[in-house]
Amino acid sequence: MTKSVIIALLVGGAYLTVAVRAFADDRAVDAKKLKNPIPYSKKSISQGRSIFVRYCTGCHGNDGKATVDVVADATDLTSPKLWKNGTTEGEIYKSIRDGQGASMPAFKTQLKQEDDIWNLVNFIRSLWPESMRPQLEPDSPSSEKDKNKSN
Image (cartoon, rainbow, N blue to C red; front, side, top):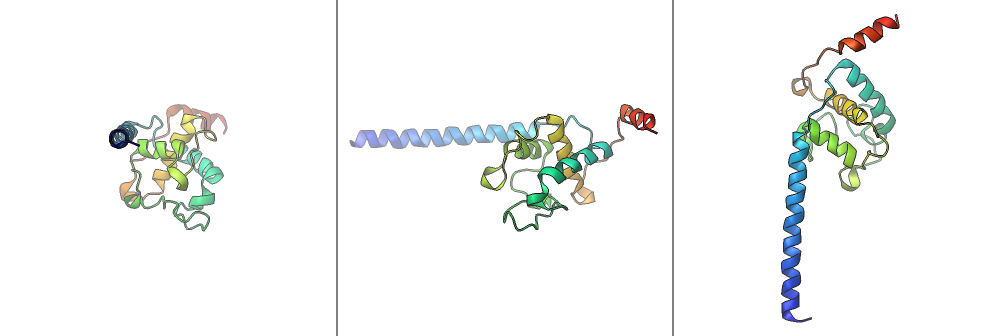
């Protein structure tokens, strides 16, 4: 290889690295801007808990503390201050949907309904220390009507 080809490859590789990092940074900013359309309510937390039990306990344990020996670096969901990939509701949503490398698989094929992922986000946030949790919102009036119909 000639010296000019090697220089061209190095410059091209450096440019590609910068472009990939900029793209990743843009995606992180976009994730931070995502807002949960599902209110943080008892109903949503309960629905999220059902999803958690089905898909998440194998790595994160029943209590979310990740003391299960299956995955050594699973995140302790009860300690958001230690999280590496962000704690906004959008960042949590993105981590669940798209995964986080080898340690956290993507769940977009298992959880096809966006509401399921958002309910799971609400459940995960309910595991946080009380001082860090969002304020609980009342269940929507339609869910109260549904509850009264079943009585």
